[in-house]
Length: 76
Image 1 (cartoon, rainbow, N blue to C red):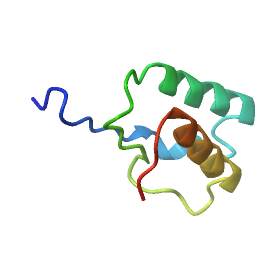
Image 2 (cartoon, rainbow, N blue to C red; image 1 turned 120 degrees about the horizontal axis):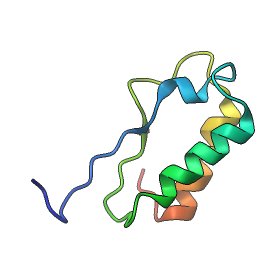
Image 3 (cartoon, one colour; image 1 turned 180 degrees about the vertical axis):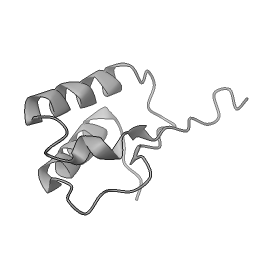
Image 4 (cartoon, helix red, strand yellow; image 1 turned 180 degrees about the horizontal axis):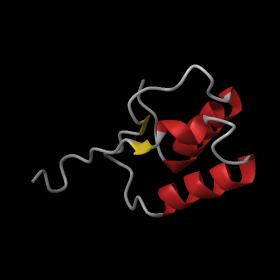
């Protein structure tokens, strides 16, 4: 519908930032696969689906930030 003008992407299931859902290696592989499949990132809106759970492993949030910054420019 939007063509090249907009990409809407949540992309990261909220459960994936919980330590009990998967180990760190599996999480990193999951995130890397997502970024590999994104294609262009000039209209990327990356978010943890729904909300970040209170028990989220903060290191995983920081890893998402790092990968997003490596992928392309970040606008606050």
